[in-house]
Image (cartoon, rainbow over the protein chains, first blue to last red):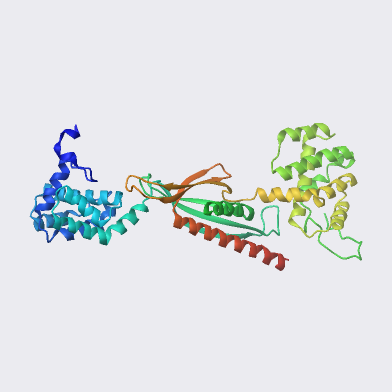
Length: 204
Length: 218
């Protein structure tokens, strides 16, 4: 049970799991001069980290050399930084609170400051981006339209019927090819007006 | 058949409502001798059927058989009569500036029975005409037409990524007349873009209809 372990006494945001403890000690081990830059990099590329690795294979090799770490240790380091950012974003932590929480679980002050510094600079952008993240797979991407005047049709001439054709491009994340579905809708004036009324209701 | 020149009204030449040549359906019709002796009731039956066909844009076999049963004509002959009447109607629709009196004259020149002329006039020039026109417009060639928009505004309080997200989103279901429906989400920015564009098109549409009312496509 988790309570048995004396390590999980913390009532703070970061629960002291074994993995986190290891990550913290890795943070504390690495060159303090290079640490802030790493944090900045992770923050900058945070939004791609959902489906892809933050760093390419070449970059990982360079980092291994730069920090003097083996691949597994480097991975732990990066996962740890990302984890901290996840939590900071989730709780919308202030930079000061972030460094305090980190120090509470054993992070050295200098490194904690590196985190809060990076968070001060780039935290807002990360949160804004997260707020924009869409959960519903089908999204309206594009709106195109065309206004026509119908002058005649079979068995009827001399008309003046206006109609509008809207093409709505919908992206669907659940579709593997990522192709967009084009929905074409024709509106008469009355129909367009009804549509507009609905939009006005939404606006309200 | 030679073009009939109307001698009334000062002997002015004008094109009959059906154009320069008598349509083949009308030509065949004038060969159906029995048609010219039909009673008013029979004409009512036939022309009611034609009217329904024009309004509904749909030829009902059942109703046609009822008509055949009710008139002293064979099925072939009834078909010929109905075809001619539909052709007459279509020629009138193609020719919106035809005057009632001229139409009547033309029918008389074609030797249409008086009983039929009276009913045709009422059908094509009376209040009923608006009904036919409306249904023709309704059934025109078109892309899927808009039926309704169902929507819902949600405010996300929290999600996996953010404890306090408070982001509004709009979920829409667009229903079309062909039965299809699309469910999708619109971000706030896209919503404003959509609303702006719809308003723009509506404004243009109104201007267009005003302009053409003034221009009058001659």
